[in-house]
Length: 424
Image (tube, rainbow, N blue to C red; front, side):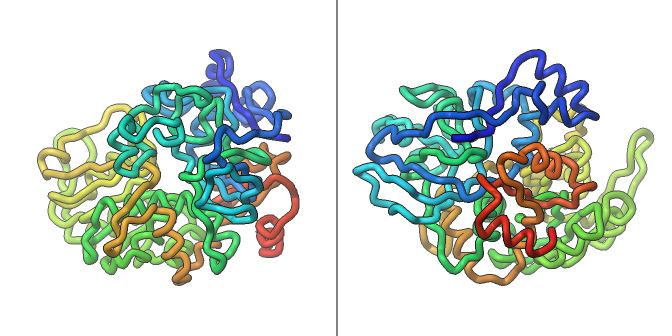
């Protein structure tokens, strides 16, 4: 069985952080520690486990950050390598353990890649508070290895559990959510990234009429626009995007206006009633107006600085861009304007319309409404053997025009053919 495995070392770290800034071969090529390997077929670890064949796996920004060694070193204790990458997994059930009741052979399933206390075989009374609350993506015991499962909080960065850039994997039944048949193949392949934004939009409790700014033009930014509208947000929603095609996509998904970074974004801020002031030293600041909620889907020093300057007094900044170490940042606006800064990770159990549902289930219900062309976010599909092209397309979106890149085991199947037929 073929799988895309990544290993780390000091020389590879140095190559990625230096030469990798301008040469893809240092990040995606043979010297990088990334490559296709032959692995034994995975076997079921226990009676509540399931064997899956991969239908597709999306390339995420965190995959690229891992390969470039740009993830926060603070999270190193919660991962283990070498690991088969990929966590945006759509799959089909091919074998079930004797105690599995949630799915059947042949089911299409979306996989929650979070590694929980339940998966590790802990007794319920020994589950951490996060897993007990149905939020295993923030498992408090993710740094503790258990028999058969190395340390780590997610598939794709765990030495013992394969990620989705492979042909087949195993997963615990608690990770699996059968896919509604009425949802088209491309949309259903996006359940994982869409659920990230649905989770954030639900937890942030955005007032239905609040003015919102979404910073970023990647999949999570587009997913956030879609999620807010699908969940009923009716207020002004400005999308900050860099390119014409991205602005068009943002509007199709529900943005009421778009603005490029710089003068256009500044003009859009003034439309909220803000005024500019120039301090003795440093960039201009703004008073009055501002956005009630700013979603930062980039996570850079520049995007965080903008979010804090553009948010209204007593507004909220929501971090979805996986920010790590970002350098000097002026936090005066946080306390002087009583701004709330909130971060959200992945998904879990939600309270929605009086029900307790996993985010994947909420997302599927929203997708079934079919009110926005979510499937257009999938722009490129590559077979596993062409993983370097897939990663390069995702890493260089300005050149490739990529939004969401999917990897499939082979050049076959409806996902691959549907994107080819669309001309992408």
